[in-house]
Image (cartoon, rainbow, N blue to C red):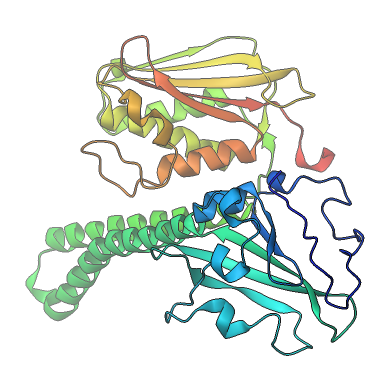
Length: 378
């Protein structure tokens, strides 16, 4: 534990360090090195007496190099304008009514950005500062979130631009030159506008799903679902659209347990996985529906659906990124949000989803759902 104690005389001539109080980590038997955030504590003289492991990781400073040094030297911080933070805030000589500093971005030597907040501990209101407690947080996780949001906005803007440009172009042309076009030409233009409008609607639905998944507000309205029949409907739709019937192989192992799930969301999962296999895979698309152990504790039964193809598959090094935002793989179009949403839907049902290599060498996705109970019984 990277904690030291100061034997220097107390600020009021007591010669003793105050006894542990409610907020004292050692008094609670907590090792500061177990804390997820950086913790730095300086005594009444500004000497560092605690420098935990997280602080060492964030600042790249060994505890032995920080303990016993003055706070401003052990933790040399600057604000974003280059001013020395401890000289600017003056925790020991500043306003006696000040209780600390709110969290803000500060810079370590070398320009690394950290989130810093401070608490001034006084034995009595407006009395001298007995401890300065500093919390440090790495900003990398927040930066990743901000980058992800920026990428999402850029992707959405790019995906919306194309269909909206098409809709605007065709409608403007029809309004300006309606009489010049034949009925067949008008129908073709309106069908294109209709398809582009559907594309925009799907993208907006994806954005709403992502928002609900990220905030934990994705609602699941459970009803009886015949998962085998649902898969069959998707296959029939592809065959009606021109795919050869022998490209699909559906195998259902009976008896299947009764499944209660959100039929619309399960359709969304099936649509995405089968479309991926048809569009990006090769050869036969095999869908297996089987009973399985439930992925949720306390339930015995579950249902698994496996979708595999005979294409080149997914590179091993990309397996752990398949369900992240914007993953498209090589030479893949679209927003890269579909599998992220699929994973969110499956997990909202209490299920699991995995990706691997099919026996034929292509990609294989497998999701398992607990049988669950209807919403009115939960």
